[in-house]
Amino acid sequence: MTEQRSPWAEPDTQIVVEPVRPSPTVQRPAGEPRAASGYRSGNVSGLGVPPVVPPPDVLIGGPDDDDPIRRNKRIMKWLGGGAIAVVVIGLVVILASVMTNNATTPGGIFAGKPDSPSDTRPELARRCPPPSIPPERPNQQVPPAPAGPRTADEEAGISYKEYGDPWSPWDAAWVDRGELKVTYRVGQHFVTEPNYGGGGSDYHATILSGHVPAAVNDGLVLDLKCIGDQIAADVRVSFYPDSNQLEPIEAKDLELGGRPARLIKFRLHFSQPGLKAKSELVSIALVDVGRVEAAILYVSIPDTHRQFDYVADEAPESVRPI
Image (tube, rainbow, N blue to C red; front, side):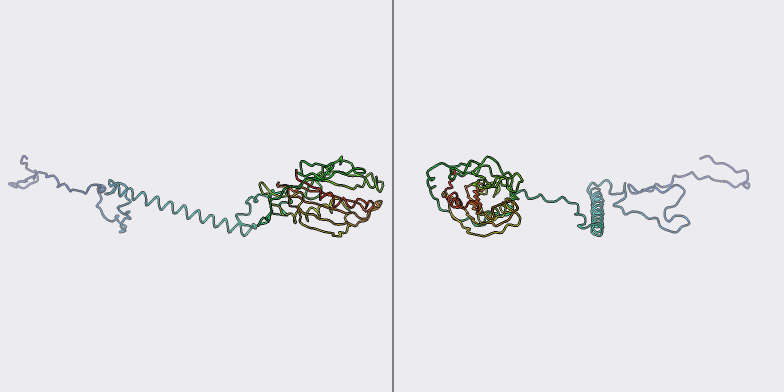
């Protein structure tokens, strides 16, 4: 540097200007933030409160930011915390909903669930489920049918004796009779009281066959006792005056044509204006023909024609499977 002389200096006083030396460089750790210019690091001026600094492992751009393991741990920590918070909130919402619904609606949150499927089984199958232990049935040969004309009911799976005059083929159909919805399409009959009571209806003696679903799918074991009782009650309600009285005669298990069967015999007493008959002999045979449907033979003889009472026994005994 060149020596200079100040105009205010005393005579013979020399001012020596020292050369300016650069300040020593302070080495900062990598990643340490630089202090703002003109302020010293430390407490905020005038407050005396140390600043809140996050822990090093959550500082973005901190000393461990370049370490992938530490970074992944950080991310997993935040994600795990967020997932736990979502689960807790969901549980709180569900609990609040359940408590609210229980307080205001019978059944709570599940009150609006759909009903279970309805029972679609046939009526007789619901009333008479198959026995838990199927009965033992010996293998028997089907005995030959009695000689003479026969009535065949292919739908029911049985045939039986056909009678001559005054009996004639059944030319009508009683469809879906009673609660069990039995249909009688095949058989014989004759009119015992035409246009009784002036109401345009005829009273009949009948030998009719039909069938009714008594099991489901491939279930071939039938509770014939239960089925027989249900059919007898259904016939009584469907074909006779409400005020009828039952006189039981017999009810037994047997075999008809080598097949398991149930025979029920009774007399019904009744009184109806304009009708001469005051009672009727009824015989009902239920036959297990190896189907899900039970075959039915229904015989009715009014007391005005008691000479045909024998048919109530003879017709069921003549039944054979076809």
